[in-house]
Image (cartoon, rainbow, N blue to C red; front, side, top):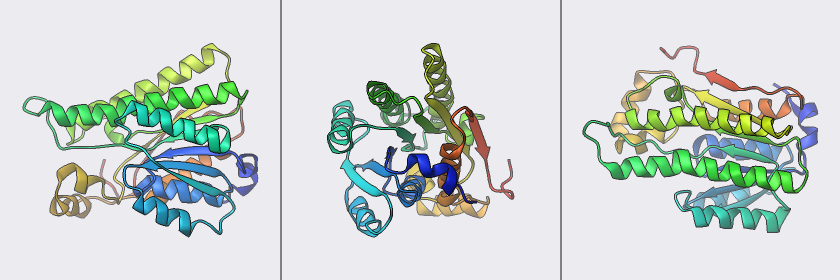
Amino acid sequence: MNYNTNMERWQGRVALVTGGSSGVGMATVIALVKQGMKVATCARSMDKLAQLSLDLKAEKGSLLPIHCDLRNEAEIMKMFETIAAQWGGVDVLVNNAGLALDSWIIDGDSEPWRNMIDVNILAPCLCARESVKSMRSRDVNDGHVINLNSMSGHRVGKLHFYSVTKFATQAITDAIRWELRGIQSGIKVSEISPGLIKSNFHKIAYDSQEKADEVYRNGAPLSPDDIAEIVVYLLSTPSHVQVHDILVRHVHQIP
């Protein structure tokens, strides 16, 4: 697909993509920089972001790597201060970072639950709050908040507590949208709900490469680039068109 014409209005403008050191986050960073955007991205480890910054030096846009632990509100606030000082503020937020840990509710420990709540619920809310605040302070009325949900946010999957947090993503997305409509803002809010994606997601979730490989043997995964292309599509839609949710899985993935 070629969205270059409709993406021209975003050239030189600022996007924040959380969790840009791998998977969908990295693919999205690459796609937006190639479209000419200024892209800030964060991770706890800077090694991959430093290399990514070097790899993208010849592209139309630019990359600002930021160290940030999304479980820490103070670090999130510092990240937004850094973006404001460097580029003025945020025009597009892609709440991509997410954490899945294999934990049930009837016999699980609360520590992994808290980690998932911090990363999957509190951090997206804080990033959305600060992004919208940044947009409104600069009279940006065509900004866009894009939340990465999951098919697990529409039906409970094997990672039970992860599904709990992803059902919350749907509520967060709807709530932000209602709040923005209530103040007659043109800022759009969308979400993407993918099925299985080839990444390190399941290795981290199960703390096992063997279990992750089994998941992929039994299912057909999308690639991170597939989701990055959907992000570009959402940004390319006319300013009056708001896509609420895109549910997407590989054509051969069994529901």
